[in-house]
Length: 250
Length: 95
Image (tube, rainbow over all chains, first blue to last red):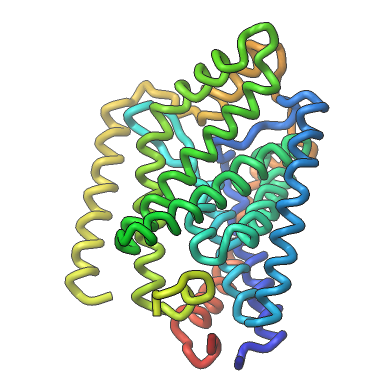
């Protein structure tokens, strides 16, 4: 292990600088639930629900960094990537709207779901604080949809597809695609829980998810290609980095 | 990445850029609002809840552009340096 603590500090500093680059001159627009939309009870519920996942992720980072100091550097890089990807609005011509991919599916297959939840939470917090993107009161809900939902679904799909004998490319594509769709499905669930009022919950949930479909179907496919492309790039350039989380790559 | 892969990637990228520009030209009147506006805030307003301004609102005048400029100069340099370390300098990471 040649990696030293000085290098770790430099990587973390570099990642923070990378975050700063993303003071984009316009608001990114997407699944993040804006400040004030959720009632206090639901905002608190999602926040409390997200805490165990963040603690689990922190413990996982600590454990794996103790075994391999290089893991911290990789985690910082993935954190920077998730931050960038999740505030990158992409126009979807078929719907005439903009939305963003999440990057948590890709993150989960590179460093695991727990650490991905932690770095996604950091990204969401910075976006809520400085980019007018998401909100502090809706932080827990956004962590549950993009962090927890995206990371766990992406990781499980990747593992499942690999067990079925499918190629790395297809598994990474599916991880990106499904994690994007799961993220927006959970956002729909959160909104339906909080806003259904006198309307039946499932009617509200279906109405919201149907409204997301024209934008998110093409965007999910883009996120699939993004994940597969990034995975392929790292696999060709530095396959040993993938060995941090995936068996059988090197 | 070999030469053939680079050429293929370049062609795919060029086609994607061309497709996006064509789509933008063909849909000049479209507002390109985000789904937070067209979906999340729409349903919230119908349910009687409206989004409020963020606690720290950096989206004022050219402040965001100024911060972006400063951070871009510093961050671009640092990011390029560490990208080299992680992806090309194999002596640094022995995993």
